[in-house]
Image (cartoon, rainbow, N blue to C red; front, side, top):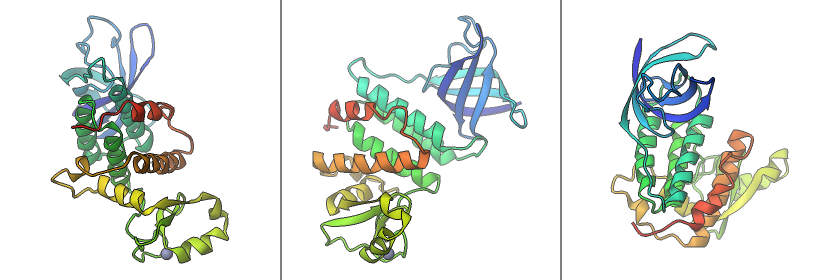
Length: 264
Ligand SMILES: [Zn+2]
């Protein structure tokens, strides 16, 4: 029997009475577990199995492709957003989707757990939603080793010249590119995955996704709406590229941006 702290990422009805849960646990990474009786009102899980809830679970860890078996779940903290914060709710679903789709099962990564817990608490507040998501994406990508290179050329490592108005950016190549590398990549099949970003957007991405930002400057960063939109576009492409498809919540990202409040 194993014990773990977990976030409920997804629930799927399995039978009249049972659920299959996708959990991200702090100790074991992502797991899929069967909760027998999880759909009953009087279940051993005390209605702790709602999406985005933080719970403490006991489960039998099965080997191979067999589902783990949940034996106990206690609610630590229910996810709550105000009715007026629909955008925050969908932003949180997006967070759950990214954690689910960008992590492998049974690959422990406490940093991802802690990041997700923190981000869900942030999104409950209903402000700075889009820049919170941009930050979350950057830190999640870093935690899985897929963070785009922003300060140095993703190909040759030379410092990116931030005096340029626009800087080449490669989705396959993993970030900003110096003009020499961009020029030679344009001649290859990678050329179709190249775009360019404004210096302001590149700077904004760097600031918002800085993992050493202990004083939370990312909340106060002055960010024009069009620059934030540009960063959103780059992240949309980058994430879709990693997933090999658009995220399911993709169409909601516009809604989130439109209903975002920038005050803290
Ligand atoms: Zn280069």
